[in-house]
Image 1 (cartoon, rainbow, N blue to C red):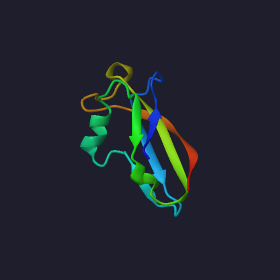
Image 2: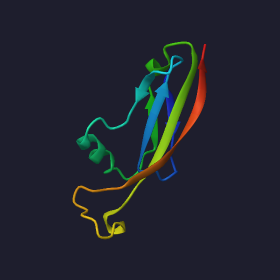
Image 3: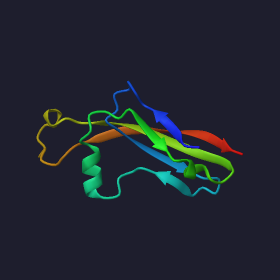
Image 4: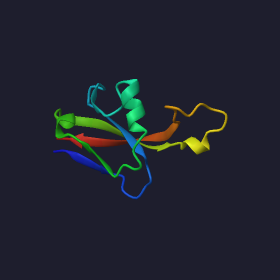
Length: 101
C-alpha cells in the first residue's frame, strides 16, 4: 500500500523522501540523481505531497521513513553571488518508523 506524505500548507518548495528497509538498504528515494535534476527540483513554488510507492514496503519488518521539507532561496535573497542557475536549498530530515507485517 502506498503512503502519501501530506505537506500541504507547510510552504516547502520541494521534499526529499527516503525509505530504508529492515536490512538497512534503501528501498525508495526521490533525491535528485543529476545536476539537472537538482536544478529542476528548485524551480517549483510549493510541494503539496509526495507518494511513497507500496513497493518500498515489500519486506516485512521495521522500515525507516525520512522526510525533509526543503526551502529554496530566491535570487533576490542572494548577495554577491552569481544567481544564474544558482539556488540554495535547506531542510532538516525527520525519520519515522513504519512496521510492515
